[in-house]
Length: 573
Image (cartoon, one colour):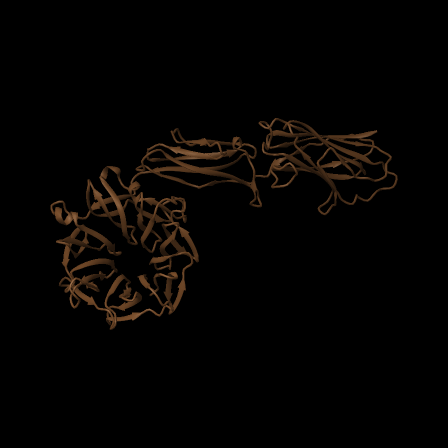
C-alpha cells in the first residue's frame, strides 16, 4: 500500500504553491535522496525501527504566473523535513527554483523515509538558489504511516513584519514655486529587521479624504508624491497586499511660517537703502549699522524702532559683528590715525548700554601688533577675534585684557565665536577648524572654518570641496552637511541658537534656516529657503539670514519691491 499526503502551501490569502507528498511502502535500505531540485542537504536519519517499511515524500510545486504569484518577487523555495520536537534533526532539504518561463511545475522528492512524525517547512526566497531574506514561510506536521493515507495543508505566511516609509512625514511649503513633488521609499522588513524584497505592484495606497494629492510609480520602481498648492494635510495609507501590512504617510502643505517686519521706515529712504542688521540677542534687541556718506554708523532696533548710536571715537567706519543678552555690541572699524598717508589699521570696539544711553570702548592691539578685529561676544563679557599676525585672541571686557589663545597652532588663526561656557571656535589656515576649551585645542575633522557654537557645544562652519563651500554642523562628534543633496550651490552658516536652529545664506536660493523642526519630522534636521516660508505676496526677497535667537526670530537682509533693507522674521505659532 502507499501513504498519500497532499498539501497545498499558500501565502496570505492566495495560493503560492501546490504540493503533493507521496509516501510509498518500499522494501529498501534507509536512504535519503532528493530529485527534481536544484540542490539538497541531508542530515543523519531518524533511528530506524526494525521491521517497519520505509516511505517516500514527493513535493510538486505549481508556479502561478508572476502577476498572480504570492510573493510575486519569489524565485525559489526551500522545502525541509525535520523530525518532531524542538531539537529534532534535519531529515532532508531541497531547493526548488522557479522555472525559466516563470510558470509550470517543479518536483522535489525525499526517498526512503522511515514512517515517523515529521515537520515539513517551506520558505520562499527572492533568489533562484534559496539565498537572501525569506519572503514567506510556513510549516506543518506530517505523519508517515505505512498502510494509511493522510492529507495535510500548509499555509505559508509572509515574513513581512512591518513597512517603513521614508521620509515618515512629507512637508511642502505652499509658497514654493512650481509643482510640489517629493520622492518616497517604501521598505518591507521582517522581525529581524532584515529587508524583505517586494515588487512595486504589491503596494497599494489610499487617502483619508478626497484630494488632488496623489502617488505615482516611477520607472525605477519607486514612488513620487504630488501635492497641490493648497494648505492642508492628507494622510496616505500604503498597504503591501501579500502581507496586508500597512503604514501611514501624512502629507502636509503648509502656509507661511514667519511674518515679515520691515525694520526701516519708508519715510527715511536714504537710511532704508543703506542699513543692515547683523546680530540679535534673546531679548529681541537688534544691532546693525546705517551707511551715510560712506560711513557705517552703529544702530540698534528695539520693538521695531531704530535708534542711531553714532560712531566709535577715532574710527572712520565700522563693521558690527555680535550682541549679547546684556546688549553689549562688538565689532571693529578702521582708522588712519598714526598711519602713513593712504594707510589705515583696524581697532575693535565695544558698545555698552547705560541708563544715559551707552558708551563706546575702543580695543587696541597688544604691543607689537598693528590691528585687531572682534567677531563674537558671550554673556560672560568675553569677546573673541584676532590681531595682526593673524593670531586668535580672547578679550576680557571688564578687565580690558587681551590674551593670545595658546592654541598650539602657529600660523593664521582666527576666533569667530564663543559660548557662555567659554568654549571658542574658529579656523586655522593650515589645519582647519578648531575648538578651544579648558586650555585644550581640538581640531574638527572635515571642517575648514568654525563660525559658531551654542550652549550644547554644537558647532557650525564650512567645508570646501571641488571649489564649493558647504554649510556643515559638527554635533556629537559627527559632521553633517546641511544640504547634502545640493552639489551645485555654495552655502554659508552665520549663527546657531540654543535650539539647534541655524541660519545663513545659500547661493541660488537666498536666506536659509535649518533645524530639527523644519522637516516636520521630530528630531530630524532639514533646511529650507526662507523665501518659501513667508507670504509670497509680501514683496520680500530674503538674501541672507544673519542671526537667530532662542525664540526663533531671524534678522535678514533682503529686497522689498526692488529696494534693499533689513527685515525681522517672527515665527507664526
